[in-house]
Amino acid sequence: MKKAFVLLLAVLVTVALAAPAMAKIKWDMHLNYPAGNFHSKGAMEFAKKVKEATGGELEIVVHPGASLGFKGPELLRAVAEGQLVIAEVPTGMVEGDAPILALTAQPFIATTAKEQRLLYEVAKPTYDKVLDKFNQFILYTSVWPFSGIYTQRPVASVADLKGLKMRVYDGTGLAFGKATGIAARKMPFSEVYPAMKAGLLDSMYTSSVSGVDAKAWEVLKYFTPINIVGPVNLITVNKEAWAKLPKKVQDAVLKVAAEMETKMWAMAAEMDAKSRATLKAKGMIVSPISPKFRAELDALGQRLRAKWAQKSGKEATRLLAEFKKQAGR
Figure 1 (cartoon, rainbow, N blue to C red):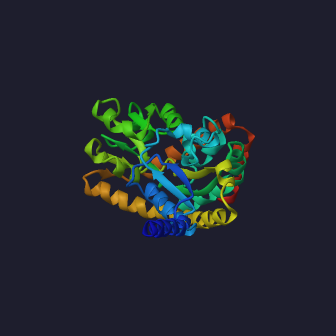
Figure 2: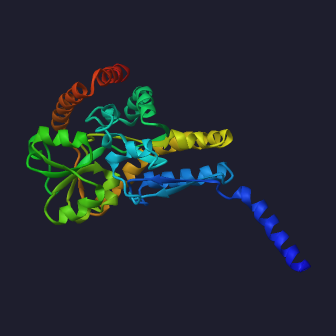
Figure 3: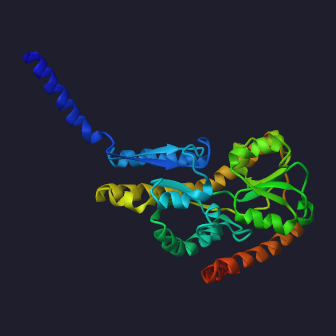
């Protein structure tokens, strides 16, 4: 009896000592992209560092590949309503709920990594106000390499785009399709490959990184880096869930988040170079665009941005003008 009591006491002491190391709060994090994508890997690193920095008080469980069942356009409301505590929200996919968030996904607006960052910094105060209305705020951001188009035939002018059956992922892609005679269809990335095989699509618009994720070389031949968009992703968290964290945990998470944002923005260019090399190694033809084609695309971009701003309101027009001013154009 005495031995049993001693044994029980030892177990209780062990559990008590171990308790601080165990996660007290768990968050499930939604990601659209497969586990091997650099955005998903960044989120996994973020989760690992948060657990370490908080001594296990907060554990973030990452769910890549949209495995929690939500689609891109649903994410803003899912976080707002607490269906998700934390998610990576692509700005171009949620313009149905908040049109202004699509600023960083407008066509042919930023032409360099430096301009991508400038565009986000110009947009950030407005983004913060909009997200506050949706009961969430930004922990950190990440950015995509500029998107090009994947096709089965070469494309060397705007006229060559007409008649393509193209998968796009946001309103910018749909507007681009309408303006150029492309039959654009917005669909989840997971549905692209079957649609290609069935002949419903013969092209897609996405980054070099996503092209590698999708093994584009199995169904398409050309990657033309038209650099239509370099969209920003927002890793947002529900404000009510955040408020439940102790102050020391909040501070630790914010520190990790700031470090992760710096790393993710730097990683985009590196991943673009690696992915383009992979596309070439797999037999895809990566075709640079001519100055004439670039001029056509720039003119098209101006028209599409003007239409978007007219639809999105005065704040959109103001932000476009402010970016143009700060970019020295």
